[in-house]
Length: 418
Image 1 (cartoon, rainbow, N blue to C red):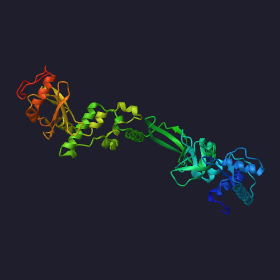
Image 2 (image 1 turned 90 degrees about the vertical axis):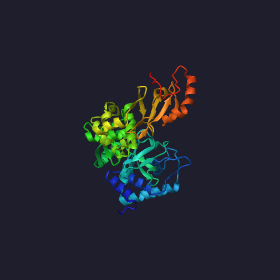
Image 3 (image 1 turned 60 degrees about the vertical axis):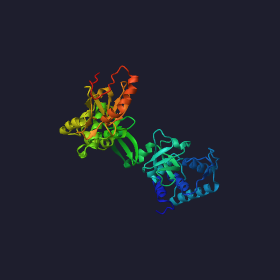
Image 4 (image 1 turned 180 degrees about the horizontal axis):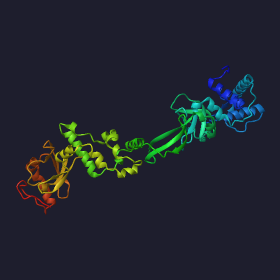
């Protein structure tokens, strides 16, 4: 309490003295209490505190520096050496005989929230035990350390720059911080493997020091992780078929079209993603990988949105096909705002009114096709087409397709069959 130091540094010195490293701690405390003893030119920087400790040791012995990194600030060196000397005298501590190898451990006692673990595969980027991010210039030697302790940072940013620090061996963390570690089970979605990740982590605050696979996983927890993965991947990862997408579009059409739209559920992709737990959850028991979804009975899961009576109404109000005058069953396309019936003109000979669905509340948009299947006319007024447009369309198509039947009176002729 009587040391003229920041409480963090005072704690470090006292802890270090208990393991016989008080002299080294005094040097570190002095270095962190004064201006940096190294000066760097433009674009130069090295954050490693052990470089400063080495320089101090060489100055005490009157030796030239071994490494030419930056230049020494003579005034700062004198002040740091004097502060360290005063601390040792006050605490009756001898000069350090430990070299600089314990620097990281001593700093960890001063800054337990700044123990840093390098992010996997990312030189110079770290996660701090307090939860924040930190970084070094990737060119710095210290940037390759798996673990270090950041002594000084640039403020409270979420991704702070490390100005001074020292590497620490993970074995020192296990030896000296074991009481602060705990095993934590984690079940989450692994986007890279596209599977549920189940493991237990040995945590030191926000850092995971070691992982082991979990062999026993709670079924509900596994399910929630898979549902999270499906949301992240998007609903297209489910085994959709063309008929199921058509079913979805038909239900959404009735929801838009009918006055009692509240009767028809919202089965859009956005709504389905928001309610995955309730409608999909019961069908994915035992699944843990995206590939497992190939076995999913998606039809049963989706059809569960509608009771049996409503399924019957769906078939009646929004049929998948319509029988045209030629006798053929032609599919209805529900993909747009207005359902479309695409059919060759000749198959509609004899039809006086435009077909409707939803108990007559929706007139179909007719795509009347040429014999080659290309749209010749788009209309919702079939009677008007026969009366006004058909003569011109007939004239054009008769010249291009002379072998086909083009009656003058399409409403009173034998139906075209194919």
